[in-house]
Amino acid sequence: MGIHSIRFKMTFLLVTIVASLVVLLLVINVAFAEKFYISGKSKTMHNTYDKVNEIIAKYDSGEINKTTMMTELDSYVSANAMQALVVDSDWTTVYVSNMSGDNRLLQRLMLSILLGGAGKAEENSEETEELNPKDYRVDFDKFGQETVDILSTTSNYTIQKVYDKAVDDSFMELWGSLDNGDSVIIRLPIQSIKDNIEISNTLIRYVGISVMFIGLVAVFIFSAYITKPIKELSKIAERMSELDFDAKYTGKDKGEVGLLGNSMNDMSSKLEKNISKLKSANLELKRDIDKKEQIEQMRTDFLSNVSHELKTPIALIQGYAEGLKDGIADDVESRNYYIDVIIDEAAKMNTMVKRLLTLNQLEFGDDEPIMERFDIAELVRSVVNANEIRANQKNLKIITENADNTLYAWGDEIKVEEVITNYISNAINHCKGDNLIKVTIENKDDANIRVKVFNTGDAIPDEDIDRIWEKFYKVDKARTREYGGNGIGLSIVKAIMTSMGKEAGVRNLDNGVEFWFDLDCDVK
Image (cartoon, rainbow, N blue to C red; front, top):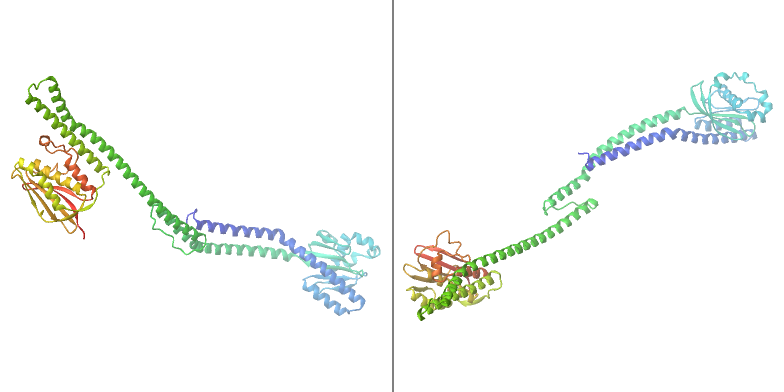
């Protein structure tokens, strides 16, 4: 339990509060208990004086006899743990309590009158002159050393606090005269209050220590109950900081801890949603950035490749045009040859530019495919027939397999026709050996039709087989230039198939190369 934990703080706070209350109680007890006790006893003495005055008055009037008077006074005085003495004008004892002797109280009464009753002496001068303390054996030297503290004074009596050295004790005394002229002294020992205060202080200390110990144990036990859900919330917050939004508060507390837990659950859900949205936005932004970088790279590659591809035909056109201008070809046959070269190179440039524009539209998504149901077998037969003249010119044979029956597929028919045309044109340009080109249609599986175009000839080198789909990439640059190729046809094929969400590929066989592409089957 660290000094910064709630458990420690609660324990420390309770101990501090209890200790402060105990100290405060001790201070109040020491400072005010005696005064409070004296104040209360002063009221009791006032009441006792009135009671004694009342009972003596009844006795003087004959309402009660002496025995009754003595009994009533003893009952009242003893009940308040007091001593009392009443004497008449001749100092004859009218009443004395059972708890004290006549002589001691009489000495106290006489001493109080002599030392503190100047006013009384003037009012009762005759009685004062007849008073002879020596007749009552009063030791004035001893009594003169007493400490007297006047608490209150009336016209009939005085209440004072006295330390009686003879008995080594402190008392409260009421001395004065009754309504009938009798002198009275009422005495109450107050040393017991000091003992009681000391006892109460000791009790407070013991009780305080016990309460602190019990409170310490109770706080240590119950603080675990209070801090347990807080620790749980701390762990949940820590897991949330690590983006673990499965962490939830499951407590049943209805107070502040429960409210905090439910708020954390709400915050967790909102954070998860917002972070999900943020991730989606970041992903979209990343795609946009990647697309922008891709477009920029494509633009750079396009400019670089176009400038490279156009350099040769432009140079040829420029050279032959300058030859015509300089009159190098002075006969008709030579001029026609120069003109045919210029026308041929211009046509190649035109074809390349058109293909590049088509490829750019496909790559940028500006030419979306129109998906329709068509007969792929009929389309294959149509493209093969269109290319038979070129094949015959090169002594090549084109055959078809499974292309005689009707077979429906889904795709953009015009773009698929361009794919087949590119494959067959590429096969015608690279066919060697047996001079055979075979176009096959087959069911790859229940969901796909595969069209394959095979030509005999040299295999594609392994280091080039994955790059032939790149724009302007040529395996054999001299041969490609020979038949007017520019390395764009297969890039167009790849872009078309990608736009339709299907695959295209190539593989080397023992006696040639096979290109293929897939289409969705007709679903009835």
